[in-house]
Image (cartoon, rainbow, N blue to C red):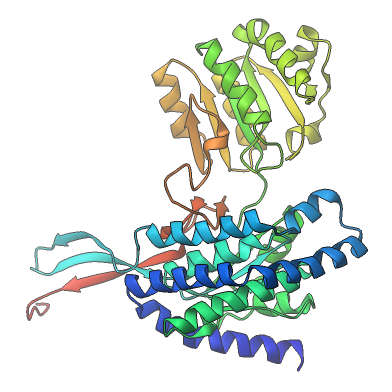
Length: 418
């Protein structure tokens, strides 16, 4: 079968299945999630064997240690997938929720109902656990999904989706609610992102190049997350102990995550007080520092920051530092270089904090806390499909509600328009 025909069949099946899952009640969806968890638990050995095949192929492809680690499954990661399914089952179901009900002068009552998106295509790389994350969120929010993982994880993803489909069958739902693309051909992605008659939304999860390609070529709406060039600004009215702890945590808690700080901005009035202390702490943790001329005058252990540094999401133990005159200059820098992900301000001046929140245009604005809190779990969403830097539909961490839309509902009692 050629790629186009194969993908068309997946699309048709998903569209049909979406009509069933969109009408499923919360209890049935939760039963399905728990049945899938049971299937994962009972099929541990086959999951590990499938993953072992992928690991061997990955080593032959020459994947580096970091990618092999992301690809690997073990008992602990299977336990985490099972726990994730239980957590999603415990979350409130957004589907069918009616809000903003108001009586109009005509006597009709008008509101909005939350509804599934329909068919969601998810394109991702390496980590097999994303298969469960994506499938569970789509299922709970009443959507059918077509999953296209990386070719390096094909055997693992097929084994996981087999467990998902068996769980769906156990509770009487069509197994085509969740499907995986079993073709490694890149043409399958091209088809998926252009099948507007079958697919309602595409969610790409991966590196910048993947997401840019999908966004540029898709004929279907895309919920995208580009760079995470996150900033922390230390104001001259900040509590220095808070500022030290926040700036250290935002960079060094984890390096390879999208909500890690990549650029530190410090008000000139407090730079002499806090920068040397921070530099010492970063050096202890092995962070390479690149800075502006003013920062390099204060501390010797900083190399020159280039224009490209301010535009770079390092995802590594590297940090750019700039000393600014005041909050206004910090905001100008953020406006110029931010990717729209997360920005933080450390200040005891509530007026400045409110101004920063009002004028900085990113999906998350944080006051007196680390950028590492920009996360669906930390925001109380329970789980997330990703973090959107878009402004339309979903913005910031995308949880169950982000996987739904709204439609208007109107209640009358024989009303006619005069």
